[in-house]
Image 1 (cartoon, rainbow, N blue to C red):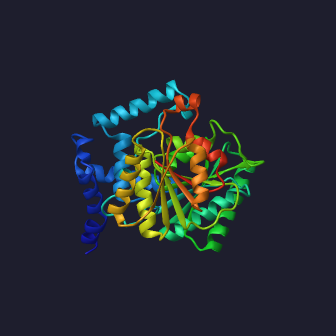
Image 2: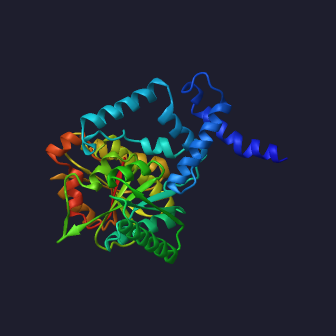
Image 3: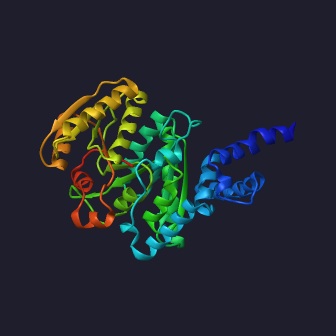
Length: 364
């Protein structure tokens, strides 16, 4: 009976994940049994590193990405190493739009988007506002908050401070009543967040402010994470924001903005919010772009949304309309230009974030 139970509930779920991902093609000359034992070992490593349970199919996919010999995986590893040699990390290109849905959602996943929410912890007072916003989403989704504090150097003082931050995080989560876990790690802050984001569904970062302005506007930790994490990123302003009742999607027809449509449909269906879809006219096809978005939402969940077609400077128009519509959350696509070009030209996303007094969910 014990062997049968192990076979049905432990061994076969992993093997089924291998078959779904066609992983034997990545490891020619090996059997499903070989891969099973390798992946179990990899799963133990991942769970020790993250402090959270990881599904069999996610571990299998990560193992293939890291070690598989299929041409696609070999090329991606070579490309990442080459980029690391040629470009600073903040100028490397990010993942393609939609990566987060293909990596984290499958037909067996529960009907939630944000099961695991990665919350970056700094210990700053404004940073706890981001925790409050993350907790609201966790309650709506039945999700778990995964706290992360990154030490730039490993020292007794840094570890003591880091542990104090994790203790405060646990205390606040218990008081709010949301499930939680936390990790203390050493390394480059942005790189650690991006690396651990692949085991999350949402990354929450506080936008620190000084005298009303976002600090370190170019090359910040936030911008590196938003450009390179293959997950939606929630930027929370360093001021208190209320509950989310009305959501506005800034839609320009880009692949990144189309990912925002999936987020908006989920919020309409599961959160009970109302919504606005805004398109700022920058071309003759703006009305068609807006109509496409509204039609998608109606066909997806049958919900009605307010449609706004406006003209003017894009960032200023987004902020103006959000105020007029009394929206509590802005959803918009991530950076469209490659990071090197963005560094020269600037970004509309950055322009909005500089002025935002509301949370901004950046879809990937």
